[in-house]
Image 1 (cartoon, helix red, strand yellow):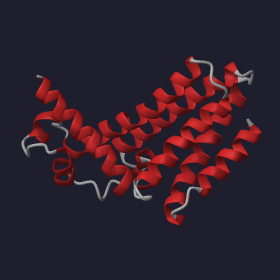
Image 2 (cartoon, helix red, strand yellow):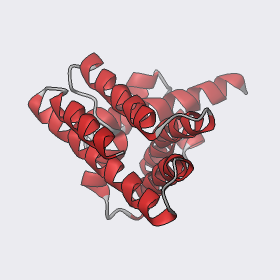
Image 3 (tube, one colour):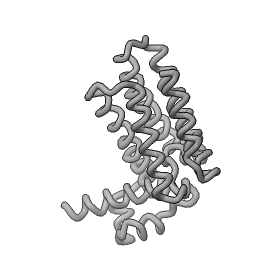
Image 4 (cartoon, one colour):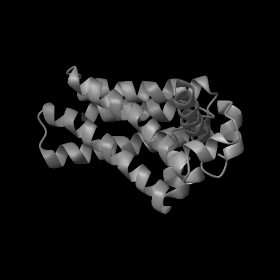
Length: 186
């Protein structure tokens, strides 16, 4: 079972990495198989729902990385500024390491497939998780529920926009600007 699980996990991870670079339209089953070194028959075996199931699981996996980062930071008592800095640093290094090819898979799918019943719902669920986790940090910092939720959504929206503009400009300045301005607000 270990080999099966590894193949499945590699496929999910590969799909998420392809989504952040190429979006939904540029993430084919063939590219996922090539990147994950998975056998052709493994798609139907692991993902009977086909490409939609694979991409949905890739979104959930990628989203959980940031949700976990937020939750762990909150659990250790990080300030909102420290949490925001960690998120911005995560995406900055991802952009630089990929020569600005890799953005955020959640943002890419949100732009391209927001109306898709499965993918759009997966994106909405991830954003809700991020908002809840970041709002929890802000609540602990003394904000009321409405302000914490609004501020969390503002931060997420600004960071996602900054990632997109950073890719277009091939510069980390948009993320740095968002980080510095939001920290002043936080």
